Image 1: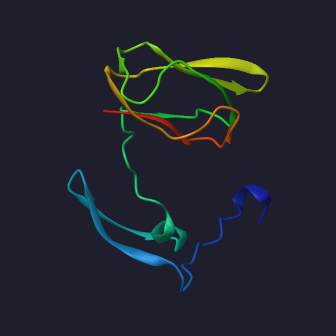
Image 2: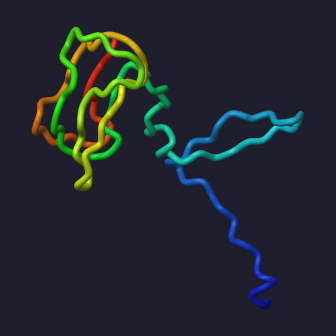
Length: 118
């Protein structure tokens, strides 16, 4: 056979793989094999609009609010220094500052909780 005529090798499931139940789409029933790592993945959790998270790793430089302060949507909360840029993080919703989870000068990883509103 030439390269064009070669058929792809069949993919076989390992013992570690799991087989899902059937899936119906448009009246047709399909069965699929999912890898074992599918079982280990974290379930989807929607983002909490009252939590301000670090959008990338950085260092907290300054706070404009304190716990108990009332903020409106769009008010400045803090400055996060990331990649040599001072980024002002704004309140995503109106509310009261419930908790400040970090300190000035602290290095934070991506998705770390910085400020919680209520």
